[in-house]
Length: 106
Image 1 (cartoon, one colour):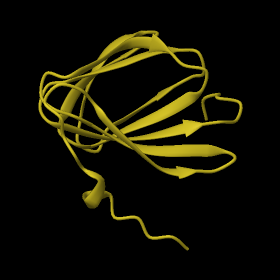
Image 2: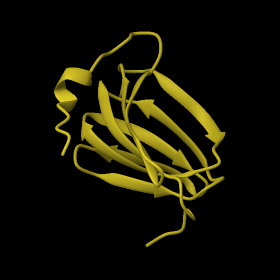
Image 3: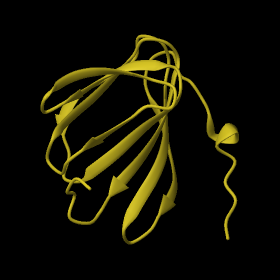
């Protein structure tokens, strides 16, 4: 068992996202992503599926089917090779879990 206190990993930079990986296993990777208000990760494709869960704040998440505004305790799943981007409306803390498997929807 490994206990991880995500509160200790929260860190904001006013100019760029702060991404902290904390689990790297064979089937999935997990990271905490913190974006200050107005900071953006421009839309781009990735070769893995991902589940984004907003732990705190509000942001616009872009995927292959458009954009959605997510708030605390909402999540979004994006398939492998699907475009993704994030823009923080408020200070935003996101849990990202990369699916290193087949990347399909449940």
